[in-house]
Image (cartoon, rainbow, N blue to C red; front, side):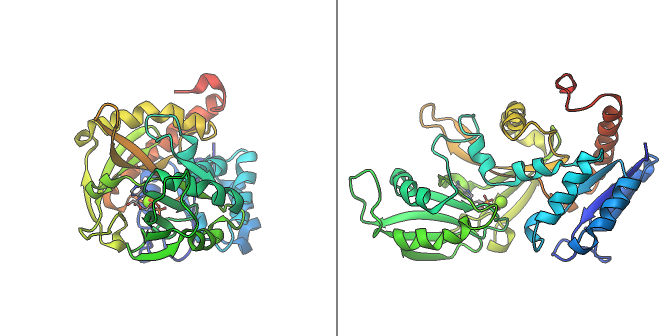
Length: 355
Ligand SMILES: Nc1ncnc2c1ncn2[C@@H]1O[C@H](COP(=O)(O)OP(=O)(O)O)[C@@H](O)[C@H]1O
Ligand SMILES: [Mg+2]
């Protein structure tokens, strides 16, 4: 083994420290060093792709991807490089396909039928389907429509019918809607027809897609982010939306308040996610669980039993930060070493390897 790890980052963005690196990358390097390994940060850009590829193949056992692909001008080149690296024996943390599968909003729909996702969740990939199906789903009540590429509440819409509310099986195209965007909780009014046309932009391009799920009104009590290190629950962030009338967003920009909790304070939630891990892994393509990832939950009340239930809103796996608890770098380093040691003995994609 080469005992070397390459960490990919992208330049720019608001998460960078004094030297242009992510503040939580240096601790990973230090923790790996303490264990007799080395690591370096490389800024990815398409222009340097060949050179970065050759260097990584040459020097590293593994890469850790800490890039938000949505922030690259074009993500194709980056994913191609990662694929080439894993195909040639570099351990991908995470595997590029896992990054896509976990990060996409349709991960929620892929988990339909499990305890953590409601039955009336849908995805739309083209305008005809959106126009045919969304007026029917809107009939069931207030909905949240999510663009695939979001990450700051942009293109995440709470959709409520103002009038008319007829008896048929679908909301008519001239119905008036109240629309609230999670970016800043601002509201707009559009007819259903106008809104559907507005949404065309979310369907365009390679990863264009919309996720349609019920609006969970207990978002008022907060969104609960579970930070995971592979199959371990590490930390919980409770994000309470601003205390204003239309607020449903858990983003800092929109005025939400964050509180950092220990997993022990959320035993039911921890149980729920632990019980779902195997299914999550299977339904999202059977890759190793990402090194660092998050799952966001909102409370709901089970209609039959009246009990609390945690509903999955989204998963993030592409560039999860941990600046608020940097000591996690120690566990990350342990996990990287354990993974690569195991990888050397057996191939982790053998069925018998499963933990
Ligand atoms: N089904 C839902 N019911 C109520 N609020 C929701 C729902 N889904 C998302 N939200 C709110 O909208 C915000 C943004 O949605 P999210 O899926 O996290 O997209 P983003 O990728 O922009 O973070 C969440 O942080 C949460 O506050
Ligand atoms: Mg979110």
